[in-house]
Length: 354
Ligand code: XIL
Image (cartoon, rainbow, N blue to C red; front, side, top):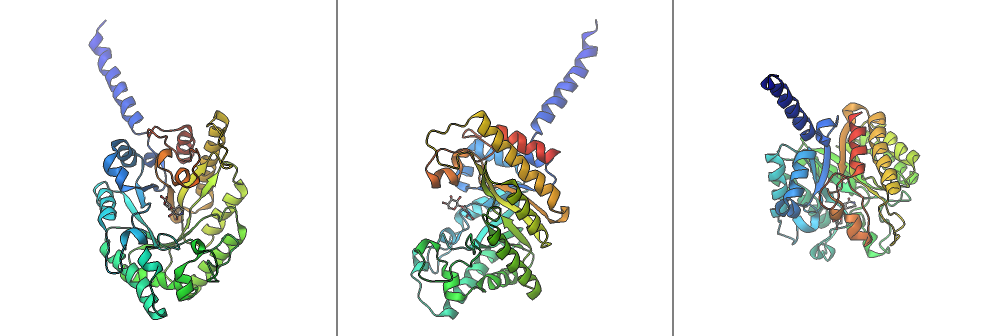
């Protein structure tokens, strides 16, 4: 037998196999952008983290480093060191960059919590912060979460009374009134009219009153010509989150006509904080189904031109804020502690591909 006659087709097949195996990535099958929140410290020091981000995702969000407390640690000091690492990496690797976030009730540095001034001084502070950050990154980023988490779960504006426990209060609302939200969008648009501007919040899928309040705000903004382009559904959910709630939040957000971003997706497998929980096959299956469900509903309910993409909140389970915050074992993301694809990765991948 003439072996060489068979060898070349065989090599060709192996080569094609190897290439297509390599191409099994989220970004290669998704019909919209697939993102992750990034921690630049991990990006710099962990090559496995960097490889997964580079291969799998084509959009990135700043997890913490562009929040107020990091970027603006003192009244007259801005520190873009960490943000620049992330932005330079993303630009060099052709990834879309979504900034997070300009006005929030958390990540408040000491100087800001102690700031004293009349409402004009507070207004100037908000405007200057927004415009300094956006001017620094002008031309480099695509979009921003301008205001984050301005509502309570019951649909009330956070916080209409100054007597609430400190961690719930938003300084912005208290010093500037509810309409600081609209003005934050105006200031952002003034600084960089090319940016897509998002309002971002959580629990819309489990709290109809909150969803309703956000939709009402957007409807009002559109009437008044406030420059808002998108809604972020954080989607920090768990294996038991009701499917109907997820579908309703996506559907109503899409009905505004704005871009819809599933902006911080993670799915808790240990929602009851049970210390004896192990990551069993049945939990993995439920979690995989929920990841697939989010993708399926997003594809079905959001018109193509409004599909801004799906972003997971960091990369590997060990990097997740869920574990850090709840101080309990959990496995909320698509990659394990060693950055290997988990079974929910496969469910997510197949749903994207379908
Ligand atoms: C979280 C980060 O992931 C944590 O590392 C940090 O300690 C606190 O903030 N909703 C948001 C995000 O909009 O900014 C939060 O990120 C998670 C919940």
